[in-house]
Image (cartoon, rainbow, N blue to C red):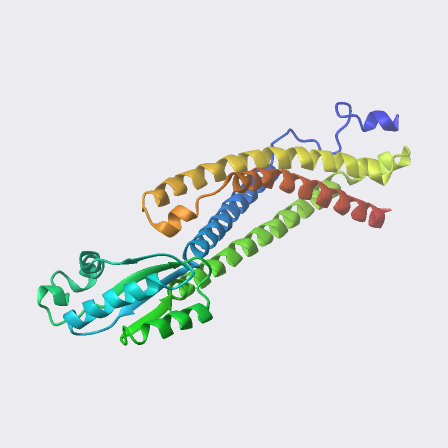
Length: 300
């Protein structure tokens, strides 16, 4: 008789239809926010990793000389000197037209010394090393350029973007912390729902115990019901999150920025997002089972 009380069709300690009540929709909201936060963290991580790998061997040589003819002569000698150094994967002197285009949004047109203005623009040489731009490699380049280009200044490109990388890493940590907080919030919501269901069905549970039912059997009923609600709510939440992620992805892709393009999600990232409802369902079922078992021990 006790076994019949616990069959899926003959008895329900929690008398509610599937996907009814607030719990599935609370879980859907939690899963959607978790997936969006996780997607943001993964995207930031991809952007930082790709950008660091791309510019790890990048070095910029600036020839800071106010006299245009001396600056050009030193830049040519610097290019020839760097070509003879070992470990150089490539280099390019940035044309004056590109420099003018870079500073035009801030200083306007006709600001370079090449156009007769009083504002000198340093000559830039983009160098690509075969390895990382370590301080030792930078010092080696500086020593080689000192005799031929005294006004040259050597900088690692990664140093310029370090504040940007630090800010992006901070946002990534914030996204991970948000995922953890949402998991705690989901646990708390399931805990409250299980306790409420226990209080509502207290008389039925006592009758089941008198008929020989065990705590594990009672907990299994609550666990199964919460699991159905969590699975349904998780599927809805994941669908909402995917719509948001895809829409935002298309918006950011339209910017055409390098860091944004490097932040595109990979197939493994999409797989992690797809696993969010599964983990949420497992977390909800485990929380419900432990909560019910703990409450039943105090009840009897």
